[in-house]
Image (cartoon, rainbow, N blue to C red; front, side):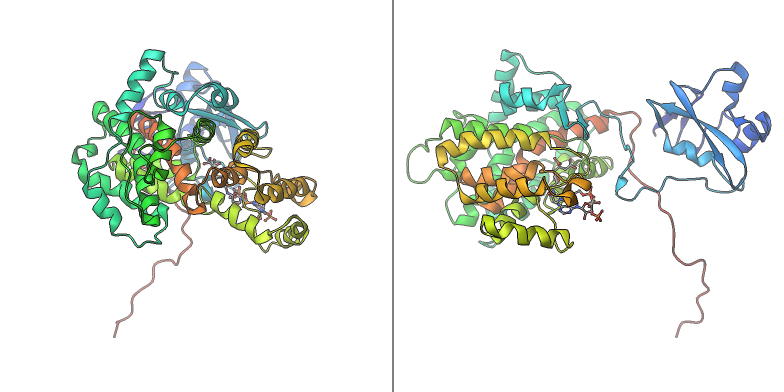
Length: 477
Ligand code: SDX
């Protein structure tokens, strides 16, 4: 049972008490401090201290002329304190109505920081630009999960542990073989992640840190294998087993593309480009998929079932599925001179410019800038293509158009990643799979943080009921 602390420092079981039982209810507090004064919680009044934390918020309910002083924590109110605001003593109390959680902090987190106005993205305090330039994906995975970059020895041990979990149970191949040849790889991946839950029954012991870390290693290691098996199945090719002599991205590319040659030769600059893409996609604080991870994880489902739910959310075209939609959009546009007509359709509200806009970034998504730069290195190897030409012209036109500027619509991480994945040789239906592989690290880091947070409990939001009042059921024929 989770304990919470009221602004006066009293600890109480939130499940058994909706408000702090040690503090008198607000109406008593109101009468205590007089109806026209601020309602200061009793302990504060007695000690003369302001609310706990660094400041308070005073609100007046004009329905009752009652004033309430709510304590602020890190400059924010605790939504639960709104419950003190009532019109009648037997009211449930006020809730905050926030569809799609536009302005709701559901947790405290020290993993990723984003400043949407300034286009800032940091993992554990390090700028994404620095990490993309100086680290590899497994080092960043270690940072996100454990809070610090690994030493050389820690990095070697980390890579060794992950390499020794890359194999899948042979039965997973039978499971994969059951899909249609044209099954979407995301459908195959989400199902196989969930199916792994049946191979590791002890994974449901989510409060055991050692069991949790074992399954963190399994999921990071097995995602490329599952992704490669899904791709090979969709092409009717035999599965290629992991090769632990290769790096994380080289092993993935080998499992995807090795044919009859004894060893597939991975181009190191293309493998590095994929490593950078994995770093950029590793975490992004409380996005849709991560919110699902935290929500399902709060019920203490095992990490395989929990992460299958998060991957399912990522598959949505408004979320991680956008990179595949960008390629379809560029192909629909077809050539640079068709761009103005397409923009007109977007501005008429007929369709969205896929790869543009973001809930948080109201300026350029820093990841898009890094991808655009990395794309030059890839195209130096693979040769440029017309999709890139259309994308660059589309971006140039959109960023000069008031319709997009007024709505703060800039390219996001998905706008250029699809073009790069395609240049690296990936089929569009694999693009969201390529998002899910690195995002595994972010999902698991956030999942662990949630499980270790004493303030967290099973997620169960409230609602504003708009349905009918009690109705009598006449004699039903
Ligand atoms: C990811 O949250 C994350 O961090 C996600 C992510 C991560 O790393 O996890 O960054 C990954 O999901 C990136 C986003 C990928 N999705 C797309 O590129 C799909 C296209 N983009 C849109 O669907 C949209 O921009 C969202 C979903 C990304 C954000 O939508 P919001 O914040 O809910 O904004 P909104 O839909 O309320 O739009 C505000 C206005 C509306 O116009 P008006 O009604 O005010 O006239 O902007 C318009 C929208 O119609 N608009 C667009 C647009 N996106 C928003 N118009 C044209 N093209 C677009 N892409």
